Image (cartoon, rainbow, N blue to C red; front, top):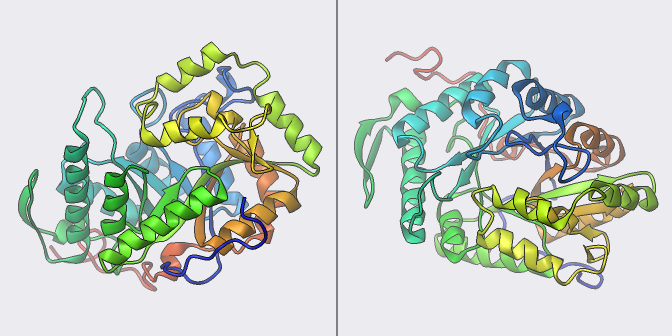
Length: 388
């Protein structure tokens, strides 16, 4: 941890000291009150996933991440469409693996969903291998870039006109105009390999990071900021992290121990290996952080890496009382982080704890509104009242 004040990132898109506070819906299975234990009462069926989203909506979270994976649970776009008419104010951060859907139709799927949500759609771009395939990394980066270009052309230009290495399209874009203006839905992106970082710097709006030391987070932010500047752009930064907050630090740390009290090492490895990203650069970095933690898996005070023993992806949590959690979050805000995607086990119960003890004390906004993506009146497009 930096001693004293943290350094501040000078080149950032959102200069206001605000945060978009989001939550997480486990569409892919794993919601439980004991890591490593299947919980039939919290399986990833439609009803439970719906209840997670509706709870987060009612508690005032501004965004919620809907992940994608080729495993049990709900797939993102059908689920998002099913829930769209039931939510009141929350945005849906839909995870999209580029290459799975024909790009012009992906633009149409997302634009339709954006209209169903009246502009409350955000998109998490995923650049992993397609299920069942082993793909060259450079090919994946190129495919990802071209899919994003097609989406952005579809949302901002009169024609989709791309002659790329993978896709070659010349199509009118009128059938895919989104509800949001001035660029369409914000694109969030995560990935720490150089190729992934370059995709984000060149095309995306928010770089999502996983738990790391403050020095590690700031180093990544500086690198992405410099890469974006080389393309004449600026981006925002977000953090995907678990949280355990209780009235006292002792209570919070007790729950952290309880979460892994029934987990054995073999079961943890089995759970992690079932996901597509279990050997990605980002996951390996999470594992490496745990090797320098203390015997209880803590690094930097209240940053706990024990969750990474049982799940791939985001492997760390902030654990503590409200003052401790807020102090850390305000340090992140000072660094330049502008979006948070929190979660906890179990998801519904932990969303209540955080909403009661921490959320009211954060400057909670919607980044799309700050960046004037949401129109003041319903836009006229072929998906609303526009002529074909």
